[in-house]
Amino acid sequence: MSEKDFFQSRVSWSKEPSLKEMAVEVGVDFDSFIEGLKEDKSDSEMAEELAVSEKLIYHLKDHFYSHGAHSIMGQD
Image (cartoon, rainbow, N blue to C red; front, side):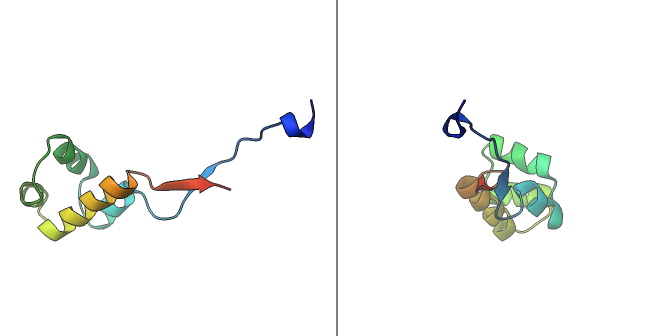
């Protein structure tokens, strides 16, 4: 087996915190937030249920839809 045929697996890395870390940091229950997404609730419905602003829900949703839950960007 030559060096050319050998593939070494590498660990992926993240450029920013995960959505779960972001939610915890601002006091949003992550599981409830994901459930709200699953049920296609509006920003205002989710904000009321989670006792936060609509603007915060908007930004968390935007992050989810543009970066996903973990924001994995590549490998070392």
